[in-house]
Length: 119
Figure (cartoon, rainbow, N blue to C red):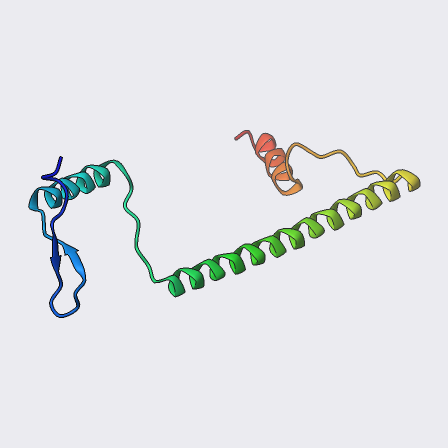
């Protein structure tokens, strides 16, 4: 166990004690990080200012999308109210429309001519 403990050495000119390089521990941590990286999705390290800026931009985009959604919801509500109002007008005044024909008038005339000619 004592072989894994780093030896202390003095950093030049400062009197601070730093651990001596330990190649076996370096290799251990390198292989550990490689195994972890293969199992996990890597992530991009960013400066905090850049990350905060990107977060702000995404929050602004969310706010814009929420406002657009609210506008679309209002538009849908207005259209539904218009449909309801028009349906009430039709029902109150007894307005009707003729039933739809199977073919538009232009095709219906053409078909009549084809039958008369025998084609």
